[in-house]
Image (cartoon, rainbow, N blue to C red; front, top):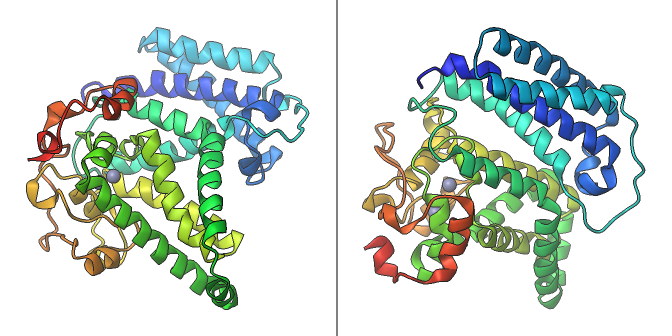
Length: 368
Ligand SMILES: [Zn+2]
Ligand SMILES: [Zn+2]
């Protein structure tokens, strides 16, 4: 909180400068650095305009930070990165050759996702904050690393998920159900997909909470002491692959159309970020229809009464059906977030990834 205005200029210049340099590299080596699926979502012209704005903003903000003597080294790294980006071609950079490759990084997905998420959520969490948390709160580096890796490695996650779901789906094909789903109008298919995926997600989510071996992985996600839009990124890779596979399974088995599945993937990405956001907006009755921040924040409450509640990520209806719905009627929020026993989850992405495999603790050690 302290010095918030004094860190904005240098951090903004640093982030935008580095992102601009990464963007130029994406233009030059698209085959290696950008993902085939995500490239189809935006145009080269759009990326160029954004890159131009990023470079201009870096030079303006970075120069202002240096003149105002605010974290000069950081501002200079931003300015230096933007300088190299310009030398490499800037917004007029030539686009490298693209041949289809099975493996590539999703650096473009990371850049655009970080840019637009920050653009939307930083102002929202500043002006409509539920709790006063610094943007650079404890653990932000850990969560930023999770965010970076889960975006950059998207292709590898996708390959693992597709391999597991398509193998299972082929084994349990149900032609009759597939025919019924295919005959449904688009919007009905979408609502059904959201409901079925959330039932699958919530069932698995309950298993994460109740089965010791699974909890070790899921405990990582619950270890955040401050919730904001970035905190939702903290998910163990085993959980990411397992959850996405199980959630997509009913959609693949029942033959939902590709456009429905794509629309669903966009929704789940958005809602997962929104659900963790630190925003205090009154939604009234809508909180009982859609999973919104207060609903998922109670799932993260460091409180025994809520340790086994609110598993849904789309529709509270799913928790109502599973008997795990609980939301204070008075509009209150949790006092504290995190696992019940704070010492059970280490800090840092590496230690957090190794922790589930160490098997040092029994289930009761985590939650009793
Ligand atoms: Zn959970
Ligand atoms: Zn969560």
